[in-house]
Image 1 (cartoon, helix red, strand yellow):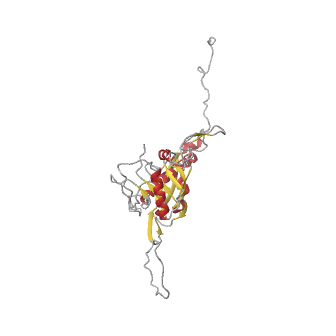
Image 2 (cartoon, helix red, strand yellow):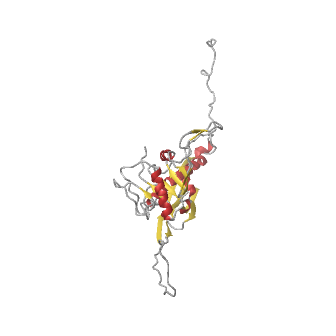
Length: 318
């Protein structure tokens, strides 16, 4: 069919109002599982310190009656420390924005500061997982805290055939990545779990990338190792949430911010975040026709005792 002659349709019309939804859709991931799991403690200096200790190995302990008592040699505690790192983001919005009628938000400043706060939280999560040595900083160099990989030296599976090496374990240096990675496997996982148990740890959480999670789905003994059709609801399941080993029960938590080559097995209460300045949204001085605000956080990572956790390093990522 054809339009009648001289039909004035929507293509001819001028002044049709725009149809713009009053909602802004954003599916960007904002989960920070490790940062959220870490307890928050107070820091009172830019260099936050703590102490670790360990019991001696068990040995024979039998004495004769009336034996003179001789004091045992004792070892001092070990003092550890990490620097606080400043995370800062700012937003500048011109004064004209106050008079605009925008879709999806009433005030641009409120919308943007909320957005940068979420982005900063992701930056913090990434820094916690980063293979980064601590940096003391100075007037021209920013302070940086040592990330989780630089603390883990006892319960480790790594490749050493092509430069791979553990750090010192006090945050002063990073791990040395091996140039020849190997695939993440159940054998590696179980070995590190056993090592953690023998060291006295009781880990609860395994942080790993989506790629390594697919490897974990193939672990033997996983009831969902193969996709199964449920008689109820016709559901297909291929999921691993909790892995039960002789050395403990571990929850697998996919993480987008840790390096895919690293798989962390963590005892959650042996990690915390020392807050020198909790996240704050504050207005900055203005000298023109604009508003300026910043979101700032200053904190450090505390590894209370690295023997309670472990890392499977140098895993292939494709």
